Length: 116
Image (cartoon, rainbow, N blue to C red):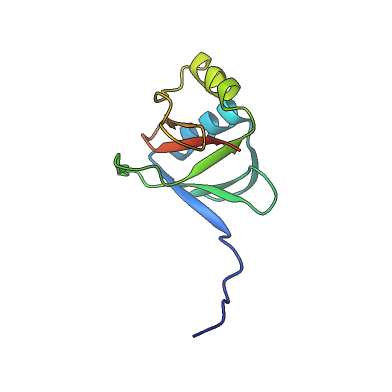
Protein backbone atom coordinates (compact mmCIF):
# COMPACT_ATOMS: atom_id res chain seq x y z
CA UNK A 1 0.00 0.00 0.00
CA UNK A 2 1.58 3.27 -1.05
CA UNK A 3 -1.15 5.82 -0.37
CA UNK A 4 -1.99 7.25 3.05
CA UNK A 5 -5.61 6.64 3.91
CA UNK A 6 -5.87 7.56 7.62
CA UNK A 7 -6.86 11.21 8.04
CA UNK A 8 -6.31 11.76 11.77
CA UNK A 9 -6.69 10.22 15.19
CA UNK A 10 -10.34 10.64 16.04
CA UNK A 11 -10.29 10.00 19.77
CA UNK A 12 -8.30 8.95 22.79
CA UNK A 13 -10.02 6.63 25.29
CA UNK A 14 -8.52 6.99 28.75
CA UNK A 15 -9.35 4.14 31.16
CA UNK A 16 -10.50 5.21 34.62
CA UNK A 17 -11.53 3.16 37.67
CA UNK A 18 -14.70 5.09 38.51
CA UNK A 19 -16.44 6.97 35.70
CA UNK A 20 -18.55 9.28 37.88
CA UNK A 21 -15.70 10.34 40.18
CA UNK A 22 -13.31 10.79 37.24
CA UNK A 23 -15.86 12.78 35.25
CA UNK A 24 -16.39 15.09 38.19
CA UNK A 25 -12.60 15.46 38.64
CA UNK A 26 -11.97 16.33 34.96
CA UNK A 27 -14.85 18.80 34.92
CA UNK A 28 -13.79 20.51 38.15
CA UNK A 29 -10.08 20.49 37.32
CA UNK A 30 -10.21 21.47 33.63
CA UNK A 31 -13.78 22.67 33.06
CA UNK A 32 -14.27 20.11 30.24
CA UNK A 33 -17.85 19.89 28.96
CA UNK A 34 -19.69 16.64 28.27
CA UNK A 35 -20.32 15.98 24.57
CA UNK A 36 -21.93 12.55 24.96
CA UNK A 37 -22.17 9.72 27.47
CA UNK A 38 -23.43 6.22 28.00
CA UNK A 39 -23.33 3.81 30.94
CA UNK A 40 -19.59 3.09 30.58
CA UNK A 41 -18.06 6.05 28.72
CA UNK A 42 -18.22 9.82 28.46
CA UNK A 43 -16.90 12.11 25.73
CA UNK A 44 -15.45 15.44 26.84
CA UNK A 45 -14.96 18.61 24.82
CA UNK A 46 -11.39 19.88 24.80
CA UNK A 47 -11.18 21.54 21.40
CA UNK A 48 -12.23 21.15 17.78
CA UNK A 49 -11.47 17.73 16.25
CA UNK A 50 -10.22 16.35 19.57
CA UNK A 51 -12.00 13.34 21.01
CA UNK A 52 -11.13 12.79 24.67
CA UNK A 53 -13.16 10.04 26.26
CA UNK A 54 -13.14 8.46 29.70
CA UNK A 55 -13.98 4.76 29.77
CA UNK A 56 -14.67 2.91 33.01
CA UNK A 57 -12.46 -0.13 33.62
CA UNK A 58 -12.99 -1.03 37.27
CA UNK A 59 -9.73 -2.96 37.69
CA UNK A 60 -7.61 -0.51 35.63
CA UNK A 61 -3.94 -0.27 36.64
CA UNK A 62 -2.06 2.42 34.71
CA UNK A 63 1.49 1.85 33.47
CA UNK A 64 3.70 4.33 35.32
CA UNK A 65 6.60 4.11 32.84
CA UNK A 66 5.24 6.67 30.40
CA UNK A 67 2.51 9.23 29.78
CA UNK A 68 0.17 8.20 26.96
CA UNK A 69 -1.07 11.69 26.05
CA UNK A 70 -0.13 15.37 26.25
CA UNK A 71 -2.40 18.28 27.04
CA UNK A 72 -1.14 21.48 25.36
CA UNK A 73 -1.35 24.94 26.95
CA UNK A 74 0.02 28.40 26.21
CA UNK A 75 1.36 29.05 29.73
CA UNK A 76 2.54 25.95 31.60
CA UNK A 77 3.68 27.97 34.64
CA UNK A 78 0.17 29.31 35.26
CA UNK A 79 -1.52 25.94 34.69
CA UNK A 80 0.97 24.15 36.96
CA UNK A 81 0.25 26.63 39.74
CA UNK A 82 -3.52 26.19 39.28
CA UNK A 83 -3.19 22.40 39.46
CA UNK A 84 -1.01 22.57 42.57
CA UNK A 85 -3.52 24.91 44.23
CA UNK A 86 -6.30 22.41 43.40
CA UNK A 87 -4.32 19.64 45.12
CA UNK A 88 -3.44 17.77 41.92
CA UNK A 89 -0.27 15.67 42.07
CA UNK A 90 2.29 17.13 39.65
CA UNK A 91 5.88 16.24 38.78
CA UNK A 92 8.90 18.48 38.73
CA UNK A 93 9.61 20.21 35.43
CA UNK A 94 10.92 17.79 32.78
CA UNK A 95 14.25 18.40 31.07
CA UNK A 96 14.39 19.55 27.46
CA UNK A 97 11.82 21.01 25.14
CA UNK A 98 8.96 21.63 25.04
CA UNK A 99 8.50 23.00 28.53
CA UNK A 100 6.54 20.31 30.34
CA UNK A 101 5.54 18.48 33.49
CA UNK A 102 3.30 15.54 34.30
CA UNK A 103 0.20 15.27 36.48
CA UNK A 104 -1.87 12.34 37.72
CA UNK A 105 -5.63 11.90 37.68
CA UNK A 106 -7.77 10.03 40.22
CA UNK A 107 -7.09 6.66 38.55
CA UNK A 108 -3.33 7.19 38.58
CA UNK A 109 -3.06 7.99 34.87
CA UNK A 110 -0.03 10.17 34.18
CA UNK A 111 -0.63 12.89 31.59
CA UNK A 112 1.99 15.31 30.32
CA UNK A 113 1.19 18.99 30.09
CA UNK A 114 3.26 20.82 27.49
CA UNK A 115 3.63 24.48 26.60
CA UNK A 116 3.22 25.36 22.94
